[in-house]
Image (cartoon, rainbow, N blue to C red):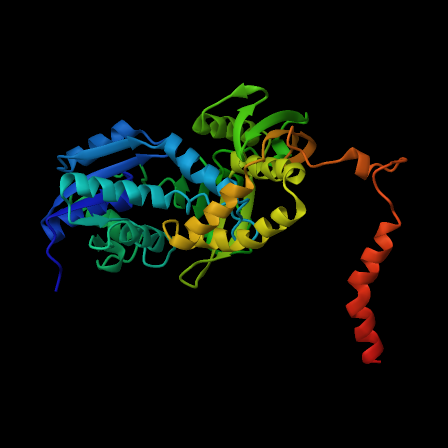
Length: 401
C-alpha cells in the first residue's frame, strides 16, 4: 500500500525526468510538491527552471546559489585527500549529491514536509548517494524514488506522459540523447553510443574542453598558491573558491585538459562507461600533490596515499555524512597544516606538467640532496641501514636453500 504523503521536496532540474516526476507526484500522491533547484555551477537558466515549476502548478520553488559552499566545503575538502575513484575518476557527480541532499532536508524541515524525492534511476549510484544522505540527516524522513515505483521504462514513455500533461521539455528535448550531469567541478556524459565501451566518444559530446589535438600550439604557464591545502590564488591574484575553480576550468578547457573515458564499477554492482570533463579539478589535483611533495614528510604522504582509495570509495558510494568519512577527514585536515606554498605548472595539449614548487614550510633540503660535496650527510651511514633492511631476506635465503 502506498504511503500517505502530505508534502514532498523534489530535487528539480527542469529537465525531462524531474518535470515528469513533478507532475507524477501531484497525480499519484495527491500531495503538495515543493521544488528545489541547487545552483552548483551547471549553467542552466535558473529563472527558466523556476518559471517552469510554477507553470506546472508549484507554489513554492526554492532556487539557491550554492556554488561557493559546494567548492569550499565539498570540492576542496575532497581535494585535500587527492581522491580518485578507481585511480581515475575525480568524483564530480558524487561530491555534489550530499550537498543537494542536505539542502533538501533543510528545506523539508523549514516547510514542514514529510518526504523528499529525487530523479535518480534504480540502476545507478545517485539513488544511493541521495538516500543514504537523507537518512543520515533525518532518520524519519520518507523517500520517494519514482524510477523504482512507476511503470515507465524508457525516455519514450516519459515523453508520452509529458505530451499528455502539456509538460514542456525544451530544456532536454530530443537534441541530446545522452545522460549528462554538470556542475562547477565537471561534466559527465553517459548512455547511447557510449554504452558500447569499444566505440570512441565523438568530439561533439564535449562541452567544456577543446580536443587536445586542437588545443593551442603554445604552452600556458600558471602559478597556483595554496594555504593549508586549499588553493587561494592564481598567478598572484586571489579568488574565492568558486571563482578560482571556474578560472581554472576556462584555462584548462582551452588547453584540452581533463578528459577521461572510464568504465567504472558502480556501487550497485553494474559496470558503466562514462566520459568526463574535469579541467580545473585535474589541474588542482596535480598542483596539490606537487605542493605536498615538498611540505609533507614521507610517512604522512604515504599514509595519505594509503587511505585515499577508502576515502574516495566512501564519497563514491554516498557516505559523505558517515562517521568514518569524518574520521578520515580529521586525519586529512591534520596533514594539511603545513601544505602552503606555490606551484608552477605548464599546460600543453591535454598535459599538465609541474615545473616548479616552493614553500616557506618546505622539507626539501638542498644540503642533503645535492650531488656536490656536503657536510651534513655521512654516506657510510647507509651501510648499516641497508644491512638491517636486508637481514630478514638473508636469513630467509640461508634457511630455505
